Image (cartoon, rainbow, N blue to C red; front, top):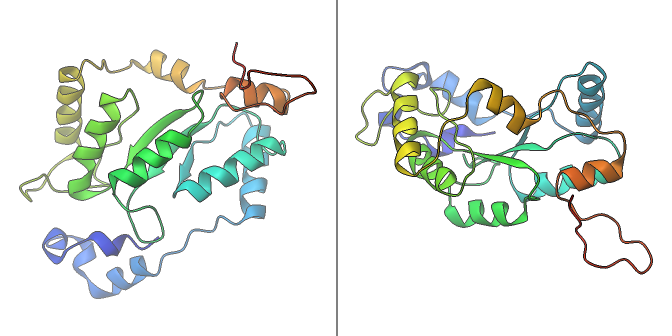
Length: 212
């Protein structure tokens, strides 16, 4: 998870990331998310009624998640984020993003995530297509002119653009409904159906995927 790939020196001035030792630590960052780790955490989360949100680093992550669903390792709504930050993740390239969108099952929710000057264009594309946007100082601290940019300012900008695109901002209640908070499914088949994933064909079955 080398976020330093896309960070230019002028972005780091006045922050802790300007320190060479901290830069080195972030450049060598790894994410402990091997198969056994993920399976165990999904088990613990679902046993405690906690719904996961899947932060995916690219197409390979989506394919792995789909296989886990088909094996019954997770039975619940699929709330996904595509992360375009480079450094072991997809790069902030629209072709990567649209390829990912094309492959995401139509019963899932999808949020875009990038960093710094890439956040605004990707969030605008996302909202124009009815997807979800992510903003805040974890992702970017500057605007398109290189000026410091607070989380509040980013939220205000995103809300304004959403309204200009004809996309209303969800209330807390609506967001819970969209994300299906508290929902779990009983079977693999129900999970596939509710997330818009093609079920396994039975003999003589046609017209899949089938949705309610």
